[in-house]
Structures are given as C-alpha cells and as structure tokens.
Amino acid sequence: MKQNIDRFEEHLRGKKRVLAVGHFHPDGDATGAVVAMASFLKSIGIECSIVLPSPIPSYLDFLDPRKSILFYTQERERADRLIFESDLIICLDFNSLSRTEDMEKALKESKAPKILIDHHLNPVTEEFSLIFSDPSASATCELLWRVLMNTSFTHGDICALPHEAHIALAAGILADTNNFSNSVTPDTFTMASQLLHSGIDLAELNDRLFKHFSENRLKMLGELLTRSMVFHPHINACSMILSQQTKRSFDYKEGDTEGFVNIPLSVRDVEVSALFTESDGYVKVSLRSKGGVSVNALSAQYFNGGGHERAAGGKIYLPLEEVRGYFERSLEQFLREHK
Ligand SMILES: [Mn+2]
Image (cartoon, rainbow, N blue to C red):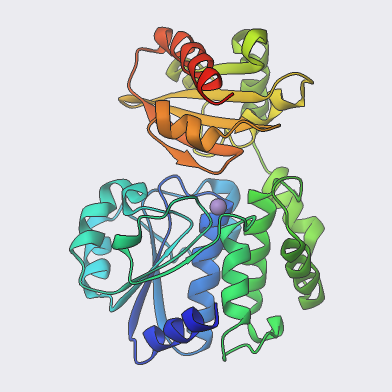
C-alpha cells in the first residue's frame, strides 16, 4: 500500500486537468467515489472533472448539487474533449474499461496515465498504470477512503477532506453494503465511525438512498413479485423478469430496480436470485446469492459479466421468453460443475 500511495502522489504532482470516471449505469458507490475523488483533488488545488458513461438515477442527484457531472450519453463531444485534454484519468468502481461502454474507445485512445481504484474481482491490469484493487473492500468508497487516509495530504485525519467528500464516501458504503448488511469489514465500521465524527447525518443519508423512490417504483415491485417471481426449488433459486412493457406501464426511471434482486433472498431456501430486465437490444442480468454460490463465476460463465462473489451483473442476448429456461439450465450445469 505504502509504495502505491507514493506512486499515487507522484502521479498527482504537477497535474492540471484530472478526470474521474465511473462505470455505466452508475450506482451510489461509483457516484460517491467520483464525487469524493474530485472534491478531494479540488481541496488540494488540482482541477478535476467528472464524466460518467450514463446518467445517475435521480435519487443520487444530491451527490451532485451543482450539476457538474458530465454524462457521456448526453454530452459526448464535450466529454471526448475532456478525456482528450486530461493529463490523468482516475477510474473508480470498475475493473475494465469495457464497463464504460461507449466511452471505452476514447479512454483507450487517451495518452494520460490511468489509475484504478476498485473492489471488483480480476481487474484488467494492462489497462492501468497504477492499480488499487481490493475485492474484500465492501465498496470502492471504502478502498478510496483507505487510499486518501494514507496520503500525506490527510495524514489519516478524515477532517482534512471536504465535507462533500464525507457525504459521498458515506453514500458509497451505504449503497454497496445495502445499509451495512453485506460484505462489511472491520474497516467499514472504522470508516463509518470516522465519518460520523466528521459530522455526517447518517439518518438523512439513509432516507435519501433508501427512502426516496417513486410510488410507481413500489407498484412495479408489487407487480413483479406477484406476476413474475418464479421459484426453482431444485436449484434453490428464484427468477424475475421485467419486460419493457411493464417498465413503461409503471413509468420506469433509471435506478428504479435498485434493490429488487435482493428481495427473494429473504426466502429461506433461495440461494440465488436473478432479475432479468429487458433493455434496448439486450437483457440486463442482476444476480445475488447467499450461502456459497459465486455469482461472479456464474455470470462470467453464462451471462457475459461478473462483479463480486455474492453480487454480479451481466448481459444476455435472448428473446425474453427464453430467458428463464436459459437461467435454469445454466445454473443447473454450474451447480453440477461446482459441487
Ligand atoms: Mn462498488
């Protein structure tokens, strides 16, 4: 760590235009991490812009009160220019440039050194000049906190960071741990404790992250649980499929399915939960597990994705009516191979 921190500080030296980027479909962790990084850099006098591949869901708008984040799908030309002009690119909360979708090409063409700070498994090492990777970190924000606390700018004092960064870091761990229920480490609570001392309002953050959804979202969840949830007892699994039609009838907005896939895991024997969301030209896959099944490996093998042992995503290109059968067959085979 120490060596990497020295290299991190060397990379920052003399930089004029840093860029912080996160993954496609940014969540609380990705958004929190880019905001915290940018606000830290500004506090030490380094200009930092933020580009995200696609817009943040509206319940995360509070992390960007000045609307300074650029979204690649909306302002491609400006974003390309920023990527081209930046002298350092910091990549947060993804393990491969391909996770930035259409932004990948511009990022690959950029000559700027790229620093990765991330907690997903198997980072694509050749894409980055410096890597902070720790799959045991509950969130990228937790790893980022560890990095920042070890620099000579903070000397371990969280109060050296701007308050905006405290809120953003807290949002990241709350979001990725689902309010401190998954993949927490002793570090998570050390960090949380420091953040509380720094004066963040945890109850308010909690409301913003978990209690700021629309009425339609809850009704859509009801529809999904009633009409689409299917249990597969022979493989201890559950699947749900959200069609474009259902999305439309409940006025679906980006981020509305956040948390849905976790719900079937509350059933005693369900060890794998899958949510398939029909999107433009593909079906988005979300996988969660409890017990020992690695949905990271499952997704890598059958769903063109990955992520974490107990939480992973992916993409498939199948007609919606074939999705459930494909899921059952894939998981059956996967369980046979991984006995
Ligand atoms: Mn994350």
